[in-house]
Structures are given as structure tokens and as C-alpha cells.
Image: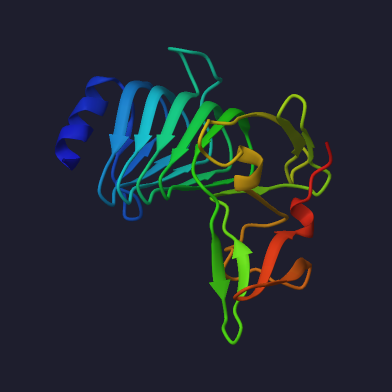
Length: 220
């Protein structure tokens, strides 16, 4: 599998090589299509592609890309399924489609659209009785002045480096709204480790349940 993907990528004139930490590294070039499977990993520091898919347990770290343009640069379409993980801290992405148990962390760069094919379930923390918290799949690391416009479904704000973002959230019929699948935090974190001190609590039939962190409340 690794040899076949590497051969295709070289043929497509992308600089792809393996290192000690990642299965593949891309620093320049452009690929029409690329899929990661099993537990493969990718570090991207430049270049771009038209169609990028994460499958199974694969992971991608995207730190930068070329300027966005269909068939020319950036990443036009990125699809996640399985138990995949995306860490996006820079670069330009037109559309993200997130499925199954995929998880994504955004902390910089340009993201034009997010489509979520997921449900947000409650998970128990502790016991006797447990505390129930919502478990979104998308984490956005940004300053706390973000704003969600209910009429346009556009999310705007500023990354920690003070650069601006504007993301069109596209709800998919039959799944939870994208805004409910987003967790906002001022620094990268795991939901299982985050403090519950600033959360709303209310009694549920099976113990305490947390509706949503205060920082996740949005104003129409």
C-alpha cells in the first residue's frame, strides 16, 4: 500500500517522502487524488490537491498549502471517515466533509466550508453519579470573540495569531447542525481532560448532564 501510493504521488510530481514521524510528507506539488488508509499518517507543509480522503485510522497534519484554486493549489475537497484525525493549523481548504467518528482540530488558515455527517452524543465523565457532557467532533482553537450568524450559517472569528476566519457551515439533512458539532477552546485540548468548572449543569434522569460549555454559546 505504501509503495503504491508513493509511486502515484511521485508520478504526479509532488514531493513525497517518508520520515521517522510520518508515513508521508508533502512540501510542494499538486495531486489530483490522494487517500490514506489503515494507520497511515501525513505531514503537509506546502503544495495542494483536488481530492484528499482520510480513511480507517489515518491521520493528517496540515501546516500549510499553496494558495487555494481548483486544479491549481490548496486543498479543494477533504473527506474524513472512520476514526480519522485531522490537525489543520495553516493553509487553505475549500470544503471539509466529516463522517463517522472522524475528528478535526482547526487552529489557523482558511477553511471555506464545513459539512458534518455526524451526531453529537453525550459521554459520561466520572461516576456516582456521572457528569454527562456533549462530545463534538470538531475543535476550533480561536479567540473568544467568535460569532455565529444563524441567518447565514457563517461562523467568523480570529485565530490566536489574530488572523481572521470565515467559515460557511453547511447542515446536512438527518444529522446534527454543524454548529452543535463544534467545540471552541483557546488552546488545543482533549474534551476528556477539559475542566468542567465553566459549564452549565442540570440534573438528568441518570445523574448530572452538562448541556454546553459557556464558551460554546452563540448569539443569533
